[in-house]
Length: 534
Image 1 (cartoon, rainbow, N blue to C red):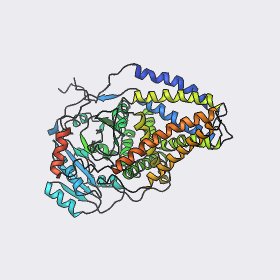
Image 2: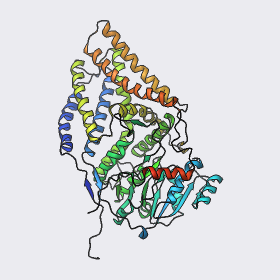
Image 3: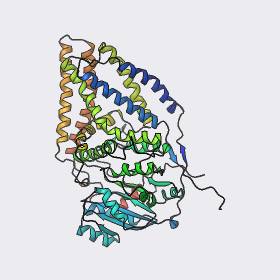
Image 4: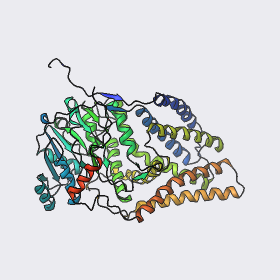
C-alpha cells in the first residue's frame, strides 16, 4: 500500500545477560585510577621506563575501544529478497591466481540465484583464464594494467556493468547459491550502501585454525572479528566492507568515486568514504561464501603486513583519514580509528614481550616504586583485563591461541611501519596454492624473539638460585615465562604444521566437484544468525 512507511533496516541486540554491558563500567572504575597511578610511577632514569608507559597506555586505550564497542552485539532483522525486482552482477577480480583456484569461484558465482552476469576481471590478458571464462559462460575483462591494484581492477569492471547491485567475490571464494536471497532484501532501504557477510574459509586444516578446548570445531584467528567486532559495529552504522563476499549498491559506489584507491586496503577505505557520505551498512553474520585461508607463515605475514600498511596509510597519510575526514559521526570516527590504530598493536606487543628480559639483563626497573608492589598491581589488572576480553569476545578468544598468534602477527605489523614511508608500487595476489612450508625470514625473527625471552628467563632463574630473591627478579622471570609459553606455543605448532603432510582438502577435486563439496558441506547448513522479520 502506498501509505505504508518506507522500509528501514532494523537491528536488534543479541539477547545476553545484562551483566555483560554492566561489567564495562566496573572495568572503567578499575582502569582509570590504575592508569592514572601508572603515569605517576615511571622510572624516567631507565630508557625503557617511558617506553613501557607508552605501551601500557596504548594497550589500555585499545582495551577500552574493544570493550566499549562490543558491549552489545546487533543482528539485522532479516528482510526477504525480491530477486526478480533486482539486477545484480558479480565481479571477480583476479591477478596471478591459477585457473584451478578461479574456476570453482566462477562456477559458484554463475549458480548464485538472482545473478545476471558474472564478470571475471584481470589486470593483464591471460589466455587460460579467458578460455575458462568462455567455456563456463562468464565474461572476461582484462585491463592491461596493474595500476591501483585490486581497486583499479574492480573500477574497470564497473565500466562493463549497469547493474543496480554488484556482488564482489575474491578469486578463491565460492559463494553459496542463496547469498543474494539472504542479503538483497536489505537494499529495500535506499540508504544501504553494502551488505557484508563473513569472510569464511573451507581449508580449515591450515596454519590459522586450531582445535579449541578439545572440540572438533576449529578455533580461527579471525573469528573474533567476524563473530564479535563486526556485529557490534552494526549498532553504530560502522560495519566494514572487507573486499569479498559482499553486495554493494552501484549508486553508492558512484557517489564516492568507485572503489577507493590510494591505499592497498581498498575495502575499509571504500566503506569509510561511504559512511562519510551518509550511506548505511549491514553486516550479515551468516557464512555464505567460503574461500582459501593462508597456507603458511609467509602468506600469513604478507597478508597481515599488507593490511597493516593499508590501514596505517589510511590513518596517517590519506586525506580520508578517520581523524579528519568530514561526515562521520563520532561513533563511526572512533570505530575507524580503532580499526586502523589496532595495526600499531605489534609495536606495543613487541615492547611488552621484550621488557621482562630487558629488566633482568639490566637489573633496572621501568617503575620508580618497589617492583613487587607494581608487579602485584599489574597482575591484578592483567587478570581483570583478559577476563573481560574473554567474556566480551563471546567465546572466540583463547588464552593460548589468541595471544600466541598475536606474537606471530607482531612481525608483520612492526615491519609495516617502513611501508608508510614508501607507498606500494607493485600489487601482488596472495598465493592460494602455497605449500605448508615456504622459506621466510619471519620464522627466524620469531625464533630470535623466543630465544631472547628464554635467555631472560634463564638469567632470572640463575640470579634467583644465586641468592637474588628480589621481587624484580621474581616478577620479571614469571612474566618472561608467560611470554615464552605464548611464543613457543606458536613456534612449536608451526614446526609440527610445516612437517605435516600437506592436506589438500578439496584441491584434488575437479572444479565442479570442489564447488559441489562446498554446497554439500555448508549450503543450507550454515547457521543463519539474523533475526527473522516479524
